[in-house]
Amino acid sequence: MTQESEVPVLICGGGPVGLALAIELGLRGVECLLVEQGDGSVPVPKMSQLSTRTMEFCRRWGIAHQAKKAGWPEEHPADFIYVTSMVGYELFRQKFAPYAKQGDLGYTPEGPRQCPQIFFDPILLRHAASLPAVTMRHHTRLQSFEEDANGVHADLTSLETGRAETITANYLVGCDGFDGHVRKALKIEYEGSGILSYSVSIFFRSKSLGTLHNKGWGRFYRLVDASGHWSDLIAIDGQELWRLTCFHIDPEKDLGSLDVEALLIRAAGTAFSYEVLSVLPWKRRELVATTYGRGRVLIAGDAAHQMSPTGGIGMNTGIGDAVDIGWKLAAVLQGWGGPYLLESYEIERKPVAVSSVNVSSETYVHETSLPADPAIAENSAEGERARKQFAEALRGRRGQGKERLHEDVKLGYSYDGSPIIWPDETRAQATKDGNSILSCRSGSRAPHAWLGENISTLDLFGDGFVLLRFGQNIDASSIVAAAAARRVPLKIVDIESRAIAALYERKLVLVRPDGHVAWRADTCPDDALALIDRVRGDIEP
Ligand SMILES: Cc1cc2nc3c(=O)[nH]c(=O)nc-3n(C[C@H](O)[C@H](O)[C@H](O)COP(=O)(O)OP(=O)(O)OC[C@H]3O[C@@H](n4cnc5c(N)ncnc54)[C@H](O)[C@@H]3O)c2cc1C
Image 1 (cartoon, rainbow, N blue to C red):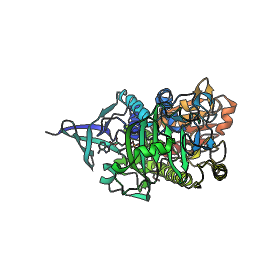
Image 2 (cartoon, rainbow, N blue to C red):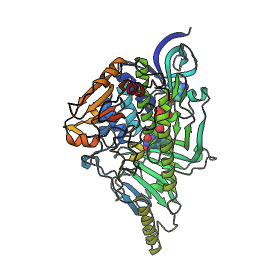
Image 3 (cartoon, rainbow, N blue to C red):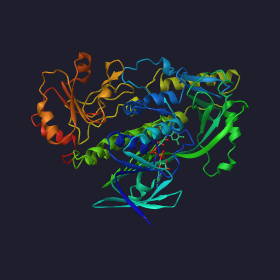
Image 4 (spheres, protein in one colour):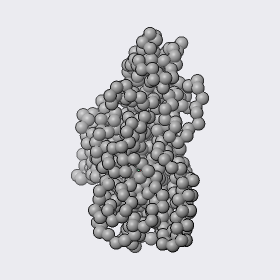
């Protein structure tokens, strides 16, 4: 017999994006059911670094300290080192200070952190499971669904017992990864150039690899030999776990014919002892879904976009999707979100995916088109010349000390064209890597500043809307009354610091639950109800 039950939100997929959405909803007290066909374990450390923005979300969720402790020894340098092999020549080094020595980054309370998915997903899972509003079922597959006026009716099957169940949900979110069932059932296509290349990642354990060379610890060892840049070796835990990702694998060859030992020895430049933990062939894709959902069914994460991991943006973009849709679903279910609020999800998040995909592909093309020279690993004058030439070419393209790699894409994105953002009267400045981060224009992430010891402005945001007021004599009563009339959760926070007032540039700044600026001005608008209706999605785009 098929069992039937109801839930406000059904999440299909328990990867990092589904788990992040469960946390966003759970922290807001919105009941959700997450179904995951697997057992929740992560066999391969795919994502390696949490972006600044993801770390800021982790801070809000109360798990940043766990992410910091999980993956990477704080005192290890996190350099990117170009080598002919681990025991071969060092060609170029992009320095990244050890986390322990990074100090205050100024633009964020939480800088990016190495915390590969084998560590990060279990942290998310434990946190989601601890929230009373979240129910999780592993070994459970979403088989099909239909939508009608009453909601989405989803058929689930337990892969352990075979038991079938129908769940009726107000909303279904497909966080079911690339080519997931939810997107396909909605007949949503992907657009983009598709497959860029075929790669294979070899996850292995070796205690000796970290010390058999003279390069010291780095996060990335980029391997460049006579054939050019052929692979990346990533130190996963800064101790004994490694991932070698080889580019340009022949898709016609089956995995069995892959000479894993030869690849590992080529990377090390010598024989060494190791234990292979898993081998993952995968396709490097460049795709974004044409639309992010239909009706009561939405998609997020890899289900909505696929990009080359170069740049480390894929999962981090998906986490941003979960945060955007999380507060909006909560608002609609709690009765204060307007009828157009959910429409703004795609409008805000798809452009972020498009720019993430583009920059990821650019980085991939850049990395794999570095000049190859047959002499590069030779112990000769010719080899010396080739190595010098390579380093100069790289220095010219990359520049020294550019530590905030892609921060404008990962952190500096703005929702300024969104229908639920009140347009800013200032013009957007052209973004420059690492310099777009402190904008306070409407649509931007409200900037970080320290309010007290380890208390950031960012710590004010998350629950409802926050109206920052820089001057207690400023009348904010019409906005407060409008929010109350529409049952929009709003609190006023008075800030006395002149430095923060200068950073925020206006005397009143309205910040959304996801930490983006919705509106700013020096006085209340003439029609505060129109403002509140706009930011809660009650005005047709
Ligand atoms: C080699 C490699 C390196 C990477 N490096 C980085 C990086 O450095 N930085 C970065 O940000 N990203 C990186 N990524 C990308 C990152 O791994 C993905 O973006 C991320 O895993 C996507 O998360 P997700 O939750 O959207 O999807 P997934 O992780 O794919 O999870 C989807 C889940 O849905 C479940 N599921 C599917 N269908 C159903 C169904 N019908 N019913 C129930 N469950 C279902 C699946 O079992 C799966 O667990 C990398 C990827 C690869 C391959």
